[in-house]
Structure formats: structure tokens, C-alpha cells
Length: 488
Image (tube, rainbow, N blue to C red):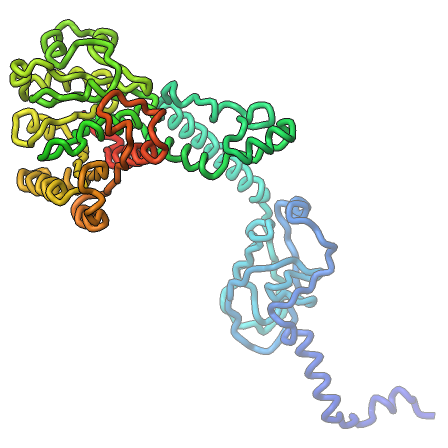
């Protein structure tokens, strides 16, 4: 009986079908790693955090990899960055389960994952025989700790710099004055500290609810207080001088000076003075109750002995609104001697103790006192009557000022239109206002008031409400036009 194994071995080889040959080629290609995508991830490691993965690796790791023979091809180092380490190699670097594929491995950096600089250097070569390659992975200490430490140190330095800058800014900031410590700023607003409302309806509700319901001030009271705040605007850099003038007498220049001074003194907390600089015998001091017989002449003669506000205040009269008035000379023979130099002496003393100084100028604008007054002026008030000739003379006053180099004062001027003069009811006041509005900043109408028409002592609280409103409006506009801060 013939040997079956011998017969089988001697039998001719069976033909291999085309399908089987294609399947064998595909398996061979898979074995060489050709069908593994270069960017696939083949890791069966359990998930780790970045710090634990870095800590679990040794400082040095050698992995022997057997490479079977394959087709002759050139291998280059592409320098791919590894995304992780697979079960049989480095996934994204292209290390398959059987070894390093034909794609090769460049500089494999796993720094972004916190595993240090793992690198495999391979040069272009022809692979034809099996070979063993060693992949060495160096795992220095995780960079996260150093980066976090650096970030903490940087943050500490930043915080220190911020604290230093804040301390420096607080030390170099201008100190606040005592006037900044107001009750509105310091007191907490609650039922006990909130002020009782003002106004008919809010007061009624506040009373009938036994102070449980506080609606706040009425709209009219709020508007009044807001105007007070605008009139109280603070100034820095010395006294503000405001002359009241016109070319014609008898139009109410002294009356306007009195109303303006009372409105300013009533609303503001600082000192206001009105100086009668009329060389021809002014009547400003007759609008308040006289408390002294001293005049501008006494101030000039005693200037060297005036060392404080008490000395100066003994030479002026003060009304109920705290407005100080310095009278002019009552003797016509001496009044002519009041000139530019005398006014400068009085103005210099007033600048020591007052925030705003009003000057009731005399009739006309060409005398020497007027020149000194305009040189110190921060703003001006032009008084006009309601008649045709009075309005024309007031406009000519503006023209003279512009021609003599005071154009800035004209553009910032306020025109007080006194409607208490004769003939006002026959004139179209709207046309007068339209004319002056083209030349000055604002116009304010001063209404007729019996107390003002009497020409005697003026009681500010007894004026008609519309008259007080006009005076306060004039004061608000004047303060608005004054520079808030200027160098001495």
C-alpha cells in the first residue's frame, strides 16, 4: 500500500483562484500596516488624567519591535505628533501591532498630553530585511506643575503690582475738603433719616399715614432744589467778578444788582459781596438795612490795617440773605475821587474773603473805574429797559464792548430785560429778546414788583414768587457762565 503522505506530497499543486489570491494579498498588506490609517487611535489603555498618565511612565522606556521584510520602499521621517500610546505601539505615529509600518516614525512629541518629549529618529532608508528597532521614550517631570507654578508666581506679581498702584493712586489723589462730608453722603437713607416730603400732596399723605408713607418731594420742589444745586456750583482759583452795567441810567441797574446778589447769597453757602462803584453817588446801600456808615472810601483808607474778614465785615452791610453790600461815597465831592486805583484796592481786598463779587457800575462806560472793572470781569450782565431807546442803548453798549476788545464777554453776557420801566406795555418785547439773543448768551425778563418799584429796602422773602424765580434764573445763568477753575 503506497504511503499516503508521500502520495500527497508528490501530487501536483492545485491552482489558486483569483479571489483567494486577492484575499492573501490584502492580508499581507494588513500585516505590513498599509491599511491602518495614520491618524487612527488604537489604544486599549484605561483612561487616565494627564498628571496620572505622566506620573505612571518611567523615566526611560525601550520597546524592541520586530519588523518583517516587506517590499522595497523608501521611508522618510514625517515628524508626526503622537496623540497617545496604543496597546502594541504609538497610535498616531503609525506603529502597528506587528511593528513600525512603512510610513516610519519622525520626531514623536507627546508634550501636549503632558508625557514629555518622546522621540524616534529615523532616516530615509530602504527596508528589505527584518530588523529590530528600539523606541526610547524619555519622560521628564510633567510640565504642568512648572507651568502652574509659573502662573501662580506671575499672578502673585500682578496682584502685588495692582495693590502697589492702588496704594500709590490713593496717596497721590487730591485730599477732599471738609465741605465734602455732607449729610446726604454720610447718612444712610431709611425711615428715620429720610427727610419729610415737601409739597402740598406729599405732605398731606405723609401726615394722614402717620409718617408711614413718604412720597418724596413734589415736582415743583424738586425743580427748586435742582436749581439750587446749579447755583451752588463751586469755583476754584479765586474770586469771580461780575459787573452789571449799561450806558443809560434809570433802567434798573441797581435793582438787578440787588436781586442777583440776594438770589446768589440765599442759595449758596459761601460769601457774596456787591460793590457800589458808581462815581456819581450810587444808591445800592439803600436797598438793604444799613448796619454801618462806612463806604468804599473807608476801605481804601484802611486797607493797610485790614488783616482778616472781621476787619473787612465791619465796613459792609449785610441783609437777611447774607449778602454783603459795600456802599459808595455819599458826598458828591469825594465821589469823583473814586478812580481806577481805588477800585483795584477794594477789589483786591474783596478777593481775599469772597467767592463772587458783583459790581454795580456807574452811568456810562468810559470812566476809569469801568476800565478796571472790565479787566477783572469773568462775565457781565447788561441791563435794558423795555422801551425803544433803552433797548437801543443797551445794544450800543454791546457794540462798544466788542469794539474795545471785550468780544468774549459780550458772547457770554446775560441781558436782564427790566419790564417795570415806562412804555413796556407798548413795545413788542419778543422782538427785543430776538435781537439780543443774536448777540449774547441768554436773556432774562425781570417782572414788575411793587416792592422793587418803591426804590427802598428790599425784602427778598416778600418779593412775588415770579420775581424771585426771575432772580434765581438770572443767578443760575450767571453761575453757569463763570469758569469753574482758573489760575490766579
